[in-house]
Length: 410
Image (cartoon, rainbow, N blue to C red; front, top):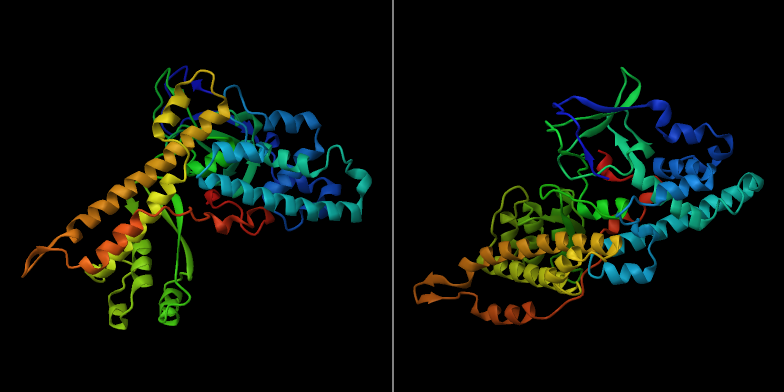
């Protein structure tokens, strides 16, 4: 829902106040005696979802249902729809993984229900399907209140636009005992009023059914790992242990931006001369050797290309979907997501090409020739071989158990 400022708003000015009695938190769930044994040691989000399930069924349906022109949560899509709209996108695997986690969570909750008070939880309101629907409703309307250090369900704001790094801030104000929406920057009369949401596009897609993440906050994650059969595996593992990294590690890639740690990890993984270990640097962008750099850049290029090829169609087709008046909200949301992800991959491919350019031909005493001619042919061939995209977001498997609430709350 686009809200227009009817008058100018100045930075720090309060746009809206919501009494804390209208903000639903874990404490509200704990106040219901029948829910106490179910929410003990569980995530705040799960506790809020269970509170919501105790309300009238229409409350869950209303909050889970998106506003006009908006997509529903992918949690509520069929598997066929997921495969069709999010082919190649890591969001598809994220949804499948988190939905499986929710199903496992509900199995544990339903076991507790049968042990404590089955009569208090009628099956028509408390089922696996209703639980997933309640979680979708919670994710669409929940906000993390930094000052109160807790999540709060705010149905009043569920259809407000959330737009990346800029916009009004939602937080708790202890002086007025209310949740406030505060202008973060100056807002002119007639300008769209949006809420700041600094989650990457994948999280916005999962929670809200789509959103616009700013380039500074948006990213994809790609895996890197050591080869267990590498004769230097043990030494490399010790080096990674010393800097707090594992033998399997996820790294973020942003718009035309590979992290120094990611590059250092890849360089270390390909070293075969122990004398080169001294050159490994996880704080500065230090090349180990021309050969090593050429190898890791070619492997990286091959992986990025495979990810781009994993999507169906092209960016032009996605743009066409956005321009179609009859396209469903889910189709448009998925097209926006695919465009955002492909842009990250393509800009990183450009960045890798720029790094490769000076390596491909280097002046030597014999004239301008490639010192890597022995390996160049191999990796040029490798670069053209499509590879299946690796599974992303593995660390999110247990997100619903309460052990690791979403990191975007911090």
